[in-house]
Image (cartoon, rainbow, N blue to C red; front, side):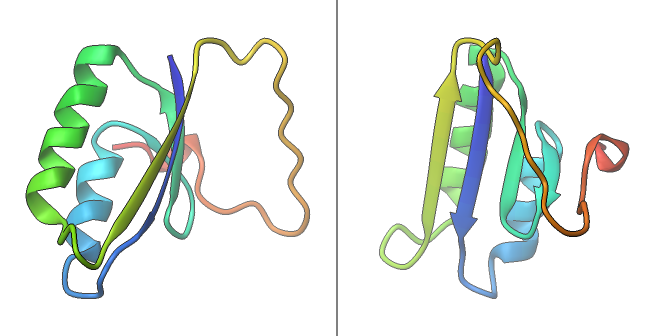
Length: 87
């Protein structure tokens, strides 16, 4: 499946969430990740991030798509992040 993950995390936890997300997805730009991921790895990602965030202050939104067949990406301005930053 293809997912887009966006987050708004407190300053103290943001580095840990960033590092965790980069293990599974491509960094697109500040607080945005995307990529193909298996259901099992998505579950692992959710568990790992769930251990880091403060559910009273932080927010993570995950959009999941079965296919990217009908999708289009348009970038205006500079391109940040990308596949070459995948760990």
